[in-house]
Length: 247
Image (cartoon, rainbow, N blue to C red; front, side, top):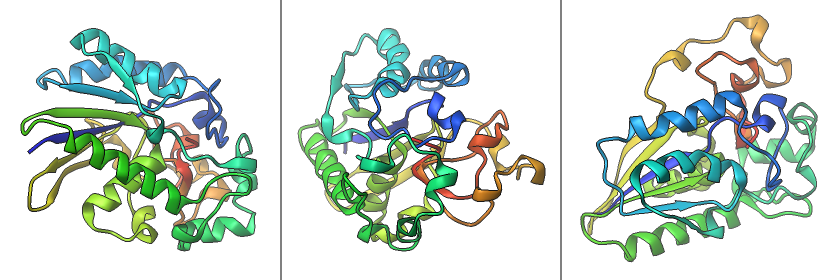
């Protein structure tokens, strides 16, 4: 019964800027994201990991580095856990993207969303689920594996484990540096944790003045934007961000 821990990268400079980072590899963790990454080994101190696997993008490398140093387990790169290829949307402001006609499809029927010059969310779901199945199939019965990836990729993996259609994945929140856990058995998967940040401060709604008017809806943020523990307005949107708080 291998166990998979899904770790989203810490808050990035794109998250705080409200920009859809996508596969821009120059995007790094901001100061708060670095603090989040430094706290990961302590949060997982009681866990013995057999493998650490990362998206190839810098912000995931930076998030996983402290845990790799603390455990001595080498980081493996798997391109299948890379961020969504948002194509022409990459590098644009989320507030601008929310006005695009495709945004409605991303919110209501993400399985039909294909980003101009990029890939479709259905393709992302398939590659992520296939990668997880391959990793789990190769694992020992009691292995504990960790994958560090991105908001929409992790949401797709969780939707698959929960038996949800991809069109329901915008109901899942995966905040920066959050941890989700799936246990695999011969009969079924058990989703044991989702979006665990180790604190409950994000449950408090932000003051109205902090909300981005473009995000003050019930939509999901592209790239998995989600509330940040420190109350930063850029991460406290109620929209589902493509890629989750600005990927």
